[in-house]
Length: 301
Length: 284
Image (cartoon, rainbow over all chains, first blue to last red):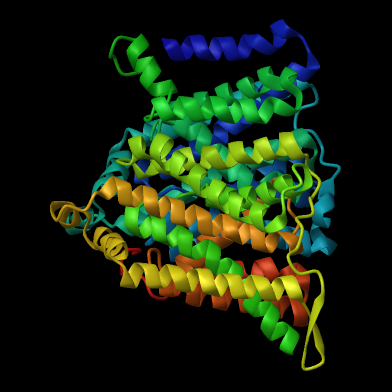
């Protein structure tokens, strides 16, 4: 019920505002919501905080740029290409690092993402260095049309990941977060579940990266720095750790809030972080999901 | 060759100053402090501001900066971190917010251009006919003295024993009457002071910008993980390895690849020795 109202609002807002700029804002909101949802699927459920989701996002985006701009393929090839590359990156990073926990896993993923960014800068012959790659085609010609396409992808992402999170698979991931050794003792192949979940999370992050690249019609290494990984984590945390739809709503809300603060000029980010600091201090289990529980009188969404 | 050896030692010493404080507060209080890089930036900016704006003599400004950063760290621990200590993720997020906020404050107050922090020694020092930057040599000496003093403090004094006791078994230590919260506060102050001092002493030969905390934070984090979280000797060893490998790559190969080489080294360590070089096996 609440979900339907929310989707209705999201679908109605850009045509009502009728402004090219705001449509762009909403496109970015929806793309970042996809990233936050994909992050929360793996890290929120397994308790392994991935500090390198920029690796998957950037992998998808650079694949789109290579396919479409460098090789001149049709723009729609970017989507399967970006997803495949992100999944491969997920497997490559996942196999050696998934036995790590807590800060060790965080640093391993952070380092992987930072390596990709530096390689993208240093191999400038192929990647355009810090200038990046320009001249990508649009997937959908009109902004509004592209917004509805991205919104549909976001809904599909939230639906698919939520279904999996509430299935046996999701239960096992939560059990791994609780006690990994006990899961192994119960005969569950923990490694397979962890790797598959990371790959799935990477697939959606990469898909979001492709959508972002075709929206900007350019990719630069600066778009995929540590800061991106951290903002995605903040979105998921504000949404509520472990909740797919909560993370998506968190992503949208934070982006809209940042947009509303645009009038503050150079104080914008300072005010934004101060608000976040106060909010996170008083609402330790996130904002969106706990608030929704309270508003809906304890019923789960 | 002598230049490379000495500059490698300088880089390692600064890294060690950052890493030792970071690992200490984790080892004792289990606080993974993502604002550690912000202490470093604050140290450099405080000295800049005190000397350039308020015309305070350099030595006074340097000591005052270190003290201010230590107070800032203790205040952060008391007000923001302590109520969240049960959840490691909450601590991570709140210290991350402190780091981002400090960065924005520095940006709003000082702008994004880099600032020049005055050096204690402005003249080159000649050693075997090689000219070396005096400030870097001073930084090396100060780092060695401070880390040595910290080591003696922990190993030789009653307070140091209390710190060690808490890090080994917090519950048992509290039963013995060691006031855990006051020890955490003290260790956070020490950790912040060390990071602030690194900023003060390395500021003159680094570019002091609002975003300097990020690189510092990531490198300190890496050094600490490679050395083994919570182990001070491990951090020093790892600082030497990473400091020297970065310096060698910068001198003999290509400065562009320094960051990548150390990142690959970190990944390899994590994969081959998940608990770090000298850490207890808690990583895997």
